[in-house]
Length: 128
Image (cartoon, rainbow, N blue to C red):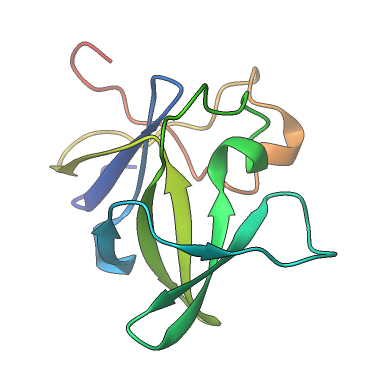
């Protein structure tokens, strides 16, 4: 199916990902985080976003990618959800891409089954 959508992109361990740009609230540098005990391992903690408490999810952990090395600090991609904003901790923020006319393909079989719930599909981009 052909699509006319805009995606805010980000990187994790060199891989290029995107979320619907209309769902993105903002992108921020590293924020002070409050750790929370007894939560899922991918939840890194909570950030205070101008008085609003936002859950920060480490997308490397969520996708089973090795932890950042050394003193590399994550970026925050704040995404609006039905339950309120959530911060995705990512390696780097990319561009907003328009994928007009590109075909959304099913995720490859090599994508682990547990990740398929997060991946709606794949776009083939020039050089990526």
